[in-house]
Each structure stands twice: as structure tokens, then as C-alpha cells.
Amino acid sequence: MTTPLSPETRDKFKQVSTATLTTALFKRGLRNQFIQDVRPLRADGPNMVGTAFTLRYIPAREDLNPMTVFQNPDHPQRVAVEQSPPGSVLVIDSRKDARAASAGSILVSRLMVRGGAGIVTDGGFRDSPEITKLDIPAYHNRPSAPTNLTLHQAIDVNVPIGCGDVAVFPGDIVVGDGEGVVIVPAHLADELASEAVEMTAFEDFVTEEVLKGRTIIGLYPPTDPQTRPDFEIWRKQNGR
Image 1: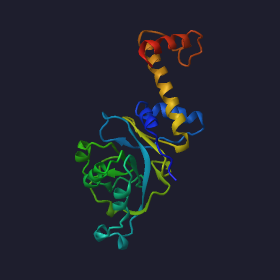
Image 2: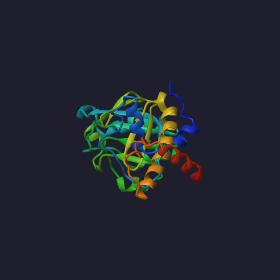
Image 3: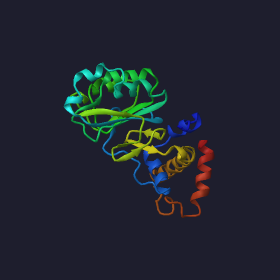
């Protein structure tokens, strides 16, 4: 059963970077949660935050994967787009192969209209210029014009997958920013979101101090006894 993502936790994830989250995950022994070789089509939007709903491709077998499979209403790619719940992120295992598209602008548009929070593939998207204009975060390896049928066979919906060398389980929390996408195990979501907000506040304080000319020694990490009192003053002044 998928653990609900509370509005409060969702809002916290929207305020923090994937860099901060990967550090918080590393503190808990999780080293490999940042999806490799995946980047946003549009890097200037707000954070993508949602629960993972997954689609898995395998290598296409030509006798089982002709154009006519799209006429089947139970085709897994179509089912994934139509069943992905509002507020979720569709995460696609394309075997890190961007030679054929994982999806195109029509399917991504449908996902957007249904309330999807985003879409991620370790392959590529076709119609990527059109997808860039849509009001839904999208992450891929690189543009790819050929239909997925030429190389990928959609086989499973909402099962554990690998995406960009990261294990993704249905219901995991997916957070994306201008650098990429990180996967947060659902049971850690609330505590990690709160910790990341605190880390972000401290790092914003540190950045201001460094830009004023202060040394990082004793400041970051805060080994100087004066750093913490200075940070508390900063927080009060900035409402953080």
C-alpha cells in the first residue's frame, strides 16, 4: 500500500535541492538515490515532487511489438498514462537506452491533464520541443525521435524498476530540480523533508557569510562555537 504524501511534506520538498537531499540520504547510508544521466527538459521551473508510479520496458521483440499493439486498450504504456494517479510522477525504466523514445508529447499532455506531477525516463522523449512547453516537469537523457516500439516493449506497470541505475519502488517519493532527480524511500519522506529544510536554511546562511568574505573554516561545518549563535540571529532576522 502506497504511503500518502502529506501536503506539508510535499511543500517542504519543493523548497529543497536534490543536492541537499542526497546528503541527508547519505547520512542514513543511502548512497545511490540520484538517477544517473537524466536532466530536465526545462531547468527553470519549480521542483517536481510526487509519488512514483512506474512503467517498465524490455527489449522489443519484433513479432510481438508491431504498430498494431497500440490498438490494444490494455497496452501497458497507455495503461500507465491513464492509471497514474494525480500528484504522482510516472517513472519509466527504458534500460538507459535513448535510441527510441519512451513517450511523446501527446501522452505527456494526457498525463498533465490528468494531474500528473511529472514524468521521468532514463531514455529519451520524442516531440521534446513540444514537451518543453507543457506545464509538467519532464526529465530524460536526450531527445529521441523514433517510436518506442522500435526498441522498447512495454511490459509492466507499477512494479519495482531500475531507472538510471537507481531502484524505484511504487510509492517512493520523486523529487526533481534543475540538476536532476532523486528518489526518497517513502518511509523516510517526512523526516528527510524536515531535515532538508533545516539544512537549506543553514546553507543559505553560510552562503551569505562566505559572500561577505568569511572563511569556511569553522563555518561549514560549524565547528566554531560562534557559528551557531550567528545562525540563530540570522534565522530571526530572515524569518527562517
